[in-house]
Length: 403
Picture: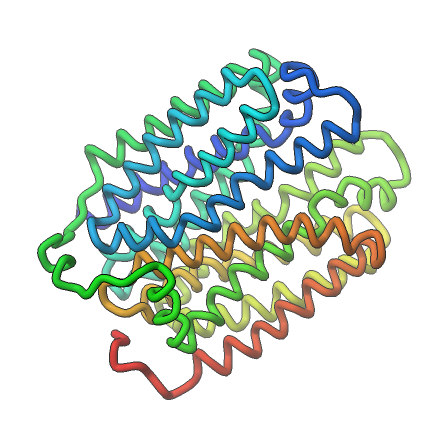
């Protein structure tokens, strides 16, 4: 089997294990705080849960560009191994936390050393033939989404069987296994001597150079707005489902279904749309995916039943399946030689920022405009982003550094 296919398979497994491990704690974080760490009172539990959940995104947003710079200098594989082994240790230590402060510090540290996903995407993009790039990015996206969907389900089930603390040990083992697979099976053709000849610049200077390429800020905005649109209504979805369902019967099931169905259709369509982008161009798939996702967000404000919401969110997931794979393929295409990993690092920072601000801004605005208003605003933002993307990606001007 060709080395790029081996890399793709192994890192798909890695993406799945890492993302499932990272989302396993979602169903029981507040319970862990209350039952194992002694936090009392609904307000204090909510406050700690919010800070601990956001901590990972905050430090990830700050440090991802640095890891991207080092990946361009020393190689993507070593950054992948650094992140994988580091996270396996830190997450295991979370199972030994004795106070919410200790858990908060460990979550901050975990975000600092994270970077398995962008390193995987950067490595796959650097070893995959250009005519298969969209397909490879779609496959990687499906692994990430599959882990994100199944993680909470697995975590909830394991917590019922073994309690909360053992889940952190299990997550640490899963990430360690994923990293060991990458260590022995992933091959990277990286010339450190050639990389050393490339003029070195600070993270800030690298950012300034990248944003001068007109297409890259538009692509970073897609990632930010996608995560913002997904996260802003997330905490309110169960209440919205309760309002539509008009009953407490099986409420948790329906709320879970509404949350999971978008990821399910995203996972199914990502490889398909990635393959389509290899034939018609990632810029075209991205344009139509933005239009579709934006148009599917707005009607969610006007549904009259849970089934209508489920159907629309399933359709939204189909279009969203074309967004991140296309963005990653285009970032690889437009990034200057020797700055690919840095570009992916900045993109991961915008993803973390979208997650963090989506939850914070969504919670704040919901008191004024409700979840219905959040759906409408998010949809309009994606449609406006489509106009920006189309203007920049269809522009004839190209920097001499473009490949």
